[in-house]
Image (cartoon, rainbow, N blue to C red):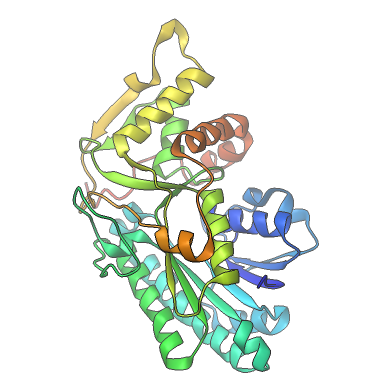
Length: 355
């Protein structure tokens, strides 16, 4: 079932903009894109989708109940893809209040608006409506050297960010079980790719490398993440909102576990190939180990066999192809990231927790 009118929250963010770009380019759906346009929201990330007559942008805060009720009444979506969230772990350590407000209160406000709207639909409309809540594997806590997260893994969040995302997941499930709202949930691994705000590891390292700055690696670089290309993730989210079973959760991963040090080294190798330094030097010489993040989870890894088995989704990008096209994108799109660097963020370390 392909939805015709989709409300996307956080659609000017990293993952949200990839979803909007795909929906406009590859479907006939009308898209209402709600974004507060915080520091991480960027309309330039929408590319050609922004010019489509099927793309409708509304600058609004998901915590604004009146605005949400009005948008539901006017746009009349048959699906919601809820991506709006504060998402940076380091920022949540120093400033958790914004995370509590957006991730918990915002999700609650959106659920209230969606439920009131859904109850007013006819029988067919109620049956086909979907509320898709997009979350993270960080709600599951930290793994040791073995094992993977699955849909049945117990929640064990370790940071203010992951705690608020865990709480929002529970709210969404509660609205399904209590009110019958047809929800689907996804928990994804670390995303990377084009239009990624440069506070995150991969774009931060690319931009610091080409400007000749030290490349910060937390601790000894041994922490492990499963990396998922954002275009693969967007395809997974579309599969879940269209074909996922109400009440079910789907874990989405890239089958690409790497230590943080391996990620940085892979970026350096790509830059050595694409933009060689004088004298045969390697960008890897700029790697600089720094004090670890407080409470840094050791390892995340996703078992994505359920979404593969039930919905036929598989990642199309390997880590090698994904890193190659990501590095190339940042080299080719200097105007995009220069505009960010000239604004509120210039690559400083976040989340120092007072020191």
